Image (cartoon, rainbow, N blue to C red; front, top):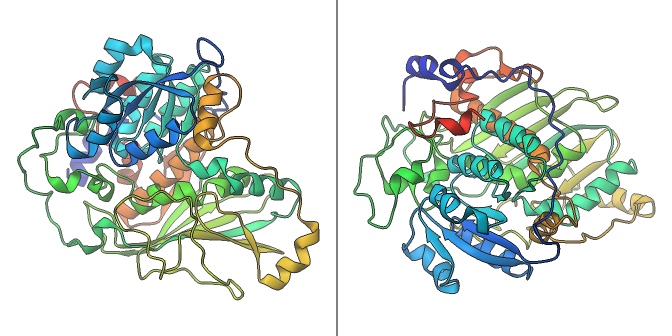
Length: 472
């Protein structure tokens, strides 16, 4: 971890001259078709263990893919064996750049399920080569990376993009849209979002004064490619196999992991855009290396046309529950939440979700595709006859992406839709790291009250050999 002074001297904004101000709103349409309509989409999976393996199964179920290549920096490790055995004839790579160089002409699309810090270079390379991109959430780790990815989607309009918040193709998406359009959801002034289950770093020592000590690199792992554009770190098992999510240098914590499944429809259909203030009301166990053990973050979004200003307050941490309104009722868990093996779902706690407060109505919802309910139940009964019919989804999130690759649908969570929400998460992470209230200018896209926080919008300069991805 560099010192504050060193970071300010070497930040990407300063050294590369990359300013965020003056970038116009991105409304690109990233829809096109594969070379022959209605044939299977030739795909490469980049990241094939754990969540990557789940995605392989999800895409297989569509019956619309031809698996051409498998890529994983830890190729040959136990967690990659199932995918390798399933597709013995697929080309195999440890470095995504070699994949594109050697067989790029054979693939239409890539499915990216790697740590957050590595999303950016893979997606930028794919888009530049005209390959459609499905990437797990959060879309990017830093504010600048999300900005550049949105710019690339605009630059390559024939490329289809989709972020992996699968609830954006499930019931909540269509319900929220219908309820907003018919005025059931209106005059929203506050949203509470909560994810209070155990996380990997909750048992760690927050007094950590230096990074984990170097350990031998596993024989199967290409550590330098795993690091991607990040400055060099010695290998330690606490960075690998999902542990990367715990560290500011590599992941996005609980906010980036779960916010995409809880706040996606709120952000899109309330047209929230970017906040003007991010206030870390509570941070427990804050340190310079990994995420706090509990966070309460308040994002202030100004008025948008006729819609009032909204405060979105995020709660994470096992003992940091949000206030629950009278008549809330039972906390329900979405059955579509994929398992991760990390044991983070604890049904005895308040399940991940949101409470949406309007001037007239209050709504509660869970995560992913779970539908909203009007609370209390007496008010729900009163409103029942006025609720509009909600259409069913014509395709799940994975089929939606593949159909869009064939020119038959439009993706529901393309980079231009999800990108600003990813930037909201980046701002929240900066507030968690700095521990101070941040003032943000959505027009210039700069943090105006803290130079260090402003530098964190871009982060450290990329490692040597990775600079080109940040100059497109």
